[in-house]
Image 1 (tube, helix red, strand yellow):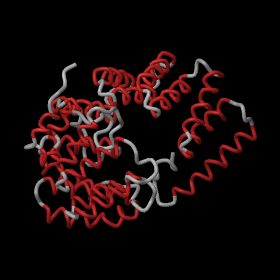
Image 2: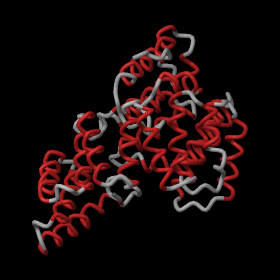
Image 3: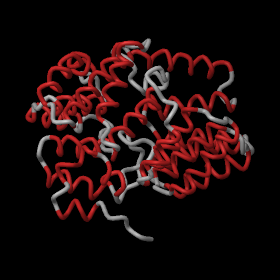
Image 4: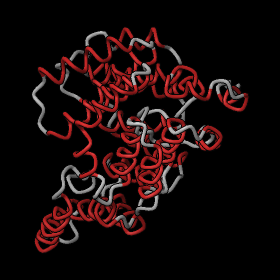
Length: 352
């Protein structure tokens, strides 16, 4: 997990300890289900060999037909292959075997949200809240689904307890999203500045991420000069991270350049990131649409969004939901596109 998430600049070396740990397990008992499960994880996350990973986890599933974890892993493989209905079926089998497994409930809920099947996703998050009442992170995830539906009042109630000391970055981010959708930029900047002053960050990169978010919101308010000054404080961290082979780091740098008004640098950084291994995924195309919009490439952004609205995926910007017409309507990042009839059409809900 440390390797696949590229947590720091030395992460590339973490693949070797993972391999050694796997080899030690294989020496002890190569055919044990636990060893095969570890092999699946290594093949999928380190090697990126999903075909081999699928074969490994299918062996585990045959050995342990009542294992909810094997069914969950099969669901992950199916989703990676783009077989969304098959993935849902595996998750439902896993939940039939282990109905109070919060990890499986969470991943199944995320998958329904990726598919924009929001009523089904909300039912699963309500099941989690029955097990973990008033859990701030679960409520924030449920709030993000409300946001994807355009239900800002429902989301606001679930996010009311989030403040500058909230430990989970994703949960804190969902509160910031809410304030942006409400056009309450002053409160969003106040909350971020309080966090920067008071919160105990475990990594400088997380702190610089919040600094970059201040700059991003300053830009939304029209304070381009202030945004550029603030963004400069995070620039070194973003440029260092972009030297990795992670396309998400590259697109994050491109967004920072766009915040700073450096259009050419932003488009070049995005182009470079999207040529990296693993860059062919909708979540990165979504970031490209954001960069295109910020750089005034409106027609290209609308073309990218048109494709995304027809695609199920895990959004790194709106997680867990894929982009929706409601999000296009409420998110101020898309304001430069609002006068275009083609964009207005995208904002219309398609009735089943």
